[in-house]
Length: 444
Image (cartoon, rainbow, N blue to C red):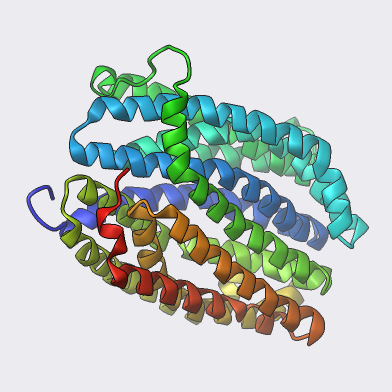
C-alpha cells in the first residue's frame, strides 16, 4: 500500500474489521428495538427519539474524534509517530471535559427541551426514563471514540472488532435481564435499555484500555504520557474537528428533527419509523466501513505527499461499497416481512412498515456511492467544506420532510422519500468539490 495506489484488497483489509465492529455495535440497536417492540409501541417510538437525542450530542465528541483521526492518520503517513501520542493524549483531556459538560446539559435541560417538542405525554415520559440512565454512558462512549480513532488512523482496525463484540454481548445480556426482569433482576422496561447500553460502553472502554496497554508500543506513539493539557495541540485538533463536530451534530440533529416531525403524525408512524431506522442503520454498516477506510486512506495518502492517489482510492471504495450493498438490498427485498418481524410481532404494524422498507432499499444505492465521495472530502482535512455541504443538504432535507408530513399530510413512506433528496444533493456537491482539486494543497 505504501508503494502504490491502495488496491481493492488494501481497502478491504482496512474496511472489513470496521464493518464487523459496526455489526456488533448495531446489534445493540437491533436488540434494543426488538425487545422494546415487545414491550409496546410507545416504548418503541420513545426509544427512537431518546436514542437520536443522545446520539446527536454524542456526535459532537465523535466529530472531535474524527478530526483527531484525520490528524493522526496524516502523522502516520508522514512517519511522525510521537505526534500521534500528543494528539491522542490531549484528545482524552478534551473529550472528558466535553462529556462532563454534555452530562449536565442533558441532566438539567433535556426534560424541558423534550416536553417542548414531544406532543405525546406517554412518549415524553418514556423518553425521559430512557435518558435518565443513558446519559451516564457518555463518558465511556467518548473514551471509545478516541481509541477507535487511534486504531483506524494507524490502520490497525482489527482491534475494533474485539471491543465491539464485547460491548454487543454485554448489552444484549443486560437488555434481556433489565428490560423484562429476568433471572431475578428488576423489571425496568425502557429504563433498563438505557442502563444496559451505558454499562456495555463502560466495559468496551476498559477493554480498549487493557488491549492498548498489552498490544501497542506505548513508547513509539508516546501515548498515555502524563502531563498538563497542551492547548496548542487541542487548538490544532479543533481547527480540523470543530467542523466535523458541527457537521455530525447537524446530521444526527437533522434526523432527530425529522423524527420530531414524524412524531406529530402519530404514535404508529413513529413506531414504523423507529423500526425503519434500526433496519436502515444495519444496512448502512458496509458503507460506513468503506467510508472510514476512505477517510483514513485519503489522509494517509496526503500525508505521504501523493494527492494523485486520492480519486482512485475513492473510486475503488465506491465500487466495493456499491456491490456490497446491492447484495444486501436484493436479499432484503425478498423477505421484508421476515426482517420487520424481528422488531415486532404485531401483524398490522408489520404490514404498515413494508412500503417504507422498500423506499429505503432504493435510497441505499445512492448512499453507497455518495458516502465515499463525502468521506473523501472529509479525509482531505477540508472539514469546513464538508460541514457546509452537510448543513445545506440537511436544511433542504428537513424542509422537504416538513412539507410532506405536516403541510401535505402524506403517508409515512412518502415522507421517507426525503432520503433520496438528501443523498442526491450530498453526492452532487461532494463530486463538484472533489473535481475542483482545491483540496490538494491543504496543510494540517
